[in-house]
Length: 65
Image (cartoon, rainbow, N blue to C red; front, side, top):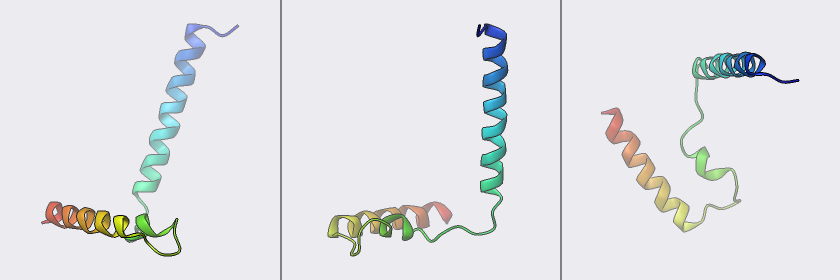
């Protein structure tokens, strides 16, 4: 039977594994360009995604400054 101690150990293990994976991904040397966020679904980007990209790009640049 599953009990509270097994539940606690399971949750701790999952949290540790997740934290390790996040750290691994964050340590990767390069990131994909922001534009790829908008390009991987459609053969041609629809106008509304063009507008969203411009807004996101503007915000990213503003926060980097």
